[in-house]
Amino acid sequence: MEKLTGLRKIKTAVFISGTGSNLKNLIKFSKTKKSPIVIDLIISNTALAKGLRYADQFNIKKKVFNFKNNKINNNNILIYLKKNQIEFICLAGFMKILSSSFIKKFNGKIINIHPSLLPRYKGLNTHERAIKNKDKFAGCSVHYVSAKLDSGRIIMQKKIRINAKDTLISLSKKVLKKEHQLYPDSILKIFN
Image (cartoon, rainbow, N blue to C red; front, side, top):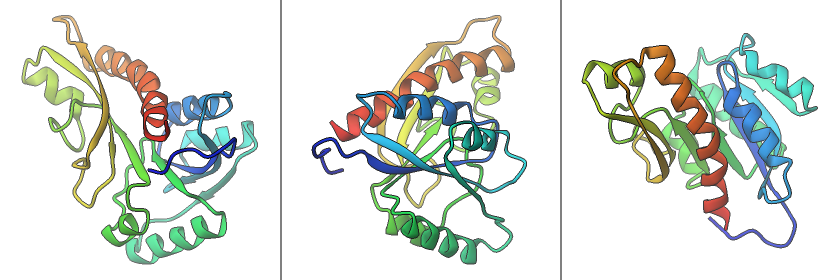
């Protein structure tokens, strides 16, 4: 990634599918002086994503793309991103897989946050699997997006201990709290 030049912030889009807690956290971070990014666009694969309310709350442009035809959609998103001069993409609970041609066009400029210590537990149900396997630790990872699911180069990770009393809910809350620290820290690491 190129170094940040002067005071210009990198035009960023955040892709979401759900409640948007990482999105809200990234928006707040982007408004700080030390942030190298500005969030200009929020994209979702569903109009039902609760996180879309942050677009209105923080006056950020939003767009919903229906993923019934993945190929057409990836192209439409690329055109839309280009039109909006987006230079960097943060996936934050985005539950669709981007095509390899889409990823190539944004090579090294798409990052994702994942609720496990990758390479362990790629995909879904990460906390459930960690508890079932009696792991001592869980955590989260921020990584570059590659054509292979949750397999891109890891930027940073945060680890937490799993207690005997942890449930799916308590563990996911603890990990989410770490995600909110990790995502901004990873962005700072990339651009500084």
